[in-house]
Amino acid sequence: MIDAGELFARERAQLVRHAYRMLGSMSDAEDAVQDAFLRWQSASRDDVRDPHAFLRATVTRIAIDRLRAQRRARETYLGPWLPEPVIVDESTAPERMVALAEDISFGFLLALERLSPLERAAFLLHDALDVPFAEIAQTLERSEESVRRLASRARRAIHETAPRRIERPHNADELRDRFGAALLNGDVETVMSMLTEDALLLSDGGGKKTAAINPVKGRDHVGRGMLGLARKAAGRFTSVQPLRVNGLPGWAFFTGEGLDQTMAIELDAEGRVETIYVTRNPEKLARLKASLGPGTSPLPISAGDPAPSLD
Image (tube, rainbow, N blue to C red; front, side):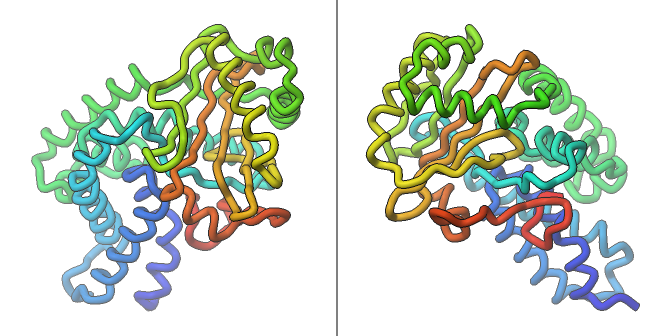
């Protein structure tokens, strides 16, 4: 018979990934899964017929409670809200990288933010984890027909607001390096040529770090804004590390105090930059800051890692 701790360890990676997509925060996801573990330890084994379903339902309910508690804070958040960034191991197999990028992309997670907590849970459980509606109904304490409607509404909203399926250029890292070099060198022509006409810049400072209060839209505004920021930051950053942020090509920027911000770029099928995501809120960087440092390798999250993993 499998030990309770051993079974939980096997499930933990998928539970963390599910909780992250529910909450948009790896820190909160880890806390939710830890709470589920405590409940799992105290649960009567005679009352748990399906440990997998029990753990999944417990994490989902904890995440729903957290989402409801956080809703007002997110509605009054200063400036654009972005999910807490996570680093994906670049050694991950290409096909797995594509799947991860779609599962945890900023665009997808931002689309999930538009859903109610129950819609979000029903959609992720059914469409992402392939959980039967009968089990979802028990988890959400709703009728099966009700959770079908929840998932259907969520699916329509996701399809209307989420970006299309990612078609990543094979030379995404090369394009990232070219775009970064152009910014650092003040190469206006190259920067402008690499941006789409309707380029978008989202910068999350949470009122704690300098960031644009509103989304910056359009090639000219985004390009000139990024070039201006690059000039101002030239003497402030001590190092820049290329990596994958939520599956997208990006960078981690460091000062003498450690990680200062992350940046990720979303490319269209032609290799042009269509969206830039900058995270500066120190609360969202705290977890990464503890594991990243100037001159060090990133702590990866990949298919083979133990918790906290997104796979």
